[in-house]
Image (tube, rainbow, N blue to C red; front, side, top):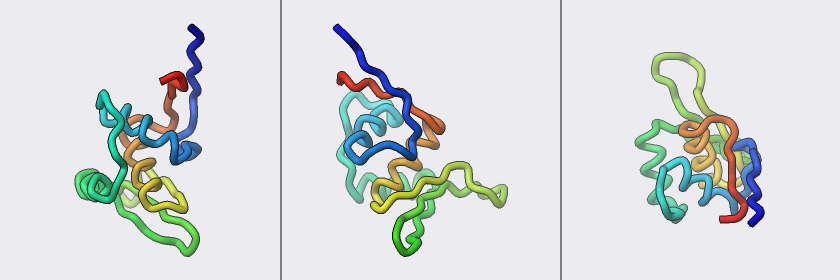
Length: 101
């Protein structure tokens, strides 16, 4: 059996790839449902700020001890921006995705 694994930057994840990547970041065995209930909990727990900039949303992790952010992601979808930011916080700037699963 041939296994396809890609290395992709978090910012390049598509909406379709987010549930799988989020599952890895959350260390779950099943893909979570991405909705505002989940994203609200992530925003609160991870101290992520969500800001709208005219054409896109920016989600950024706020570091209370310095003036810079530790993770920042943008998307036309607020949900996607939050999830990408969370994945970046948990897994770094790139992710290995198994395309066979």
